Length: 204
Image (cartoon, rainbow, N blue to C red):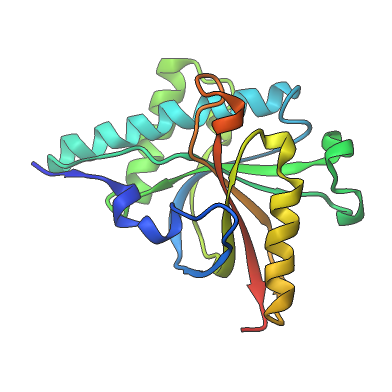
């Protein structure tokens, strides 16, 4: 029986330095995903989405362990963020935000396994949004990333730093703004929260 620490296996993509943006190449990986829209601080849709992802991620881990004998760490919550009109994408207009919340899955998790576990756990746990969750491969490709330490609402200077880093290398923003939440806002001091900010790039 093996216990796999996925954050170590995928270390390059789940660690970053504060104030030091870097370029990375992110390969295609499978994720549990759920889409929605609205202010993450107030929208019930967002709360229901996050409440569905974790039980399903743990349900898949249990299924893998039962089938193979191997365990693994459940990965952190991640989010893709955008707006239909990107000129309106700002912290002042969170109600216009669209998002995909997701949790990375190891290769051990198969589509057939997800097709069985998602409805089963949704029913057992009475997950309001469980039926909206899917297993899907996300191919991010070349990107730049940096660590943000502090409240989510204070990310703007970190994002600006990252975008300046991208522009200085003659690259262009491509794809969706991506955040990886390494801390739990329910338990951590907001000043110490760690979030990887990632932006796909084009022109390499």
